[in-house]
Amino acid sequence: MTTFQLTINESLATITLDRGRSNAINHQMVKELITCIQTLEHDTNVGGLIITGKPGFFSSGIDLIEAYEYDKEQSRALWTDFLLLQRVLVAFKKPIIAAISGHSPAGGCVIALCADYRIMADGAFIIGLNEIPVGIIVPDSIFNLYSFWLGQHKAYQYLMEGKLLKVNEAFNAGLIDEISAPESLITTAQNKMSTYMQLNTVTWSQSKLNLRKELINKLNTDQTVTLNFMLEQWWAPETRKGLQMLIQNLKSKTPAPNNN
Image (cartoon, rainbow, N blue to C red):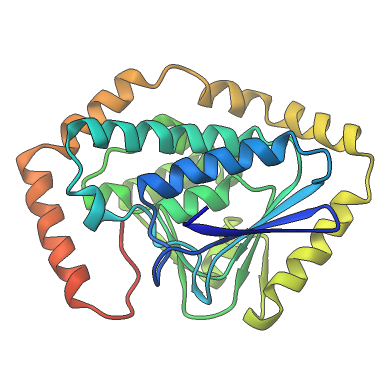
C-alpha cells in the first residue's frame, strides 16, 4: 500500500492515511482502501479498525487537481469505486472508529461517516460535505449516510448549503461523538475501541448489521442513473470552469484544506 500505512497490534488494525500533506483522495487510494478493508473483514486476527490521518488533516477529500485531469473513463472509474468504498466501509461487520486528526471536508467526511464512532482532534479544523458549492452533484447514497447520523432535516440543509462545521459545531450537531486533545487522539480511540472489542463478537457484529440494514440496502441499490448525472455535470463547461478556478486557488495557497 502506498497511500496509507497499516499496522495491526493485538487484533486492532490502524489505517493511517498517508498521501501528501493533506491526504487528498485519488483513485489509487480508493482502490487500495477497498482491497485493505475487504482483507481486514475476513482476517480472523483482526477485531477492530481505527482510521486516522496526519496532524492537521484527516483527509481533504477528492484530489481535485489530479481528478480534473482524468479522462471520462478514468472519472467514471474513480466515482464508481468511491461509491463502492462507501458501501464496503458501511457494511464492515467489525467496529470502526474514525480518529479525525484535522480537516475532513467532503470525501474525508464521507470516510469518517462510515465509522461507528467519530473522535475529532480539537483545533481550528472543519468537517462536512461541501460538494454542491464545488459543482459536484450529491448522490442519494451520500444523503442516506449523512442523514443516518444527523437526521434528514439537518442533513438536507447542510448538504444544500455545503456547510462545513467547526469542531464544536460538529459535536453539537452529532456529526462527531467526541473531541480529544490532538496528542491523545489515538489513545482515546484505542480506549473506546476496547469497549467494543471486549463484547461478544458475534452479538456485536450482527447487531451492527441489523441496525444498519436499511442503510446498507439503500447503498446497495443501482447507482448508475445517479452516477450518469454526476458525470454529466462533472464534464459540463461551467463546472470545468469553476474547477479550474478552484484548482488555481488551491495551487496558490499553502496550508489551507482542499475545499472539495
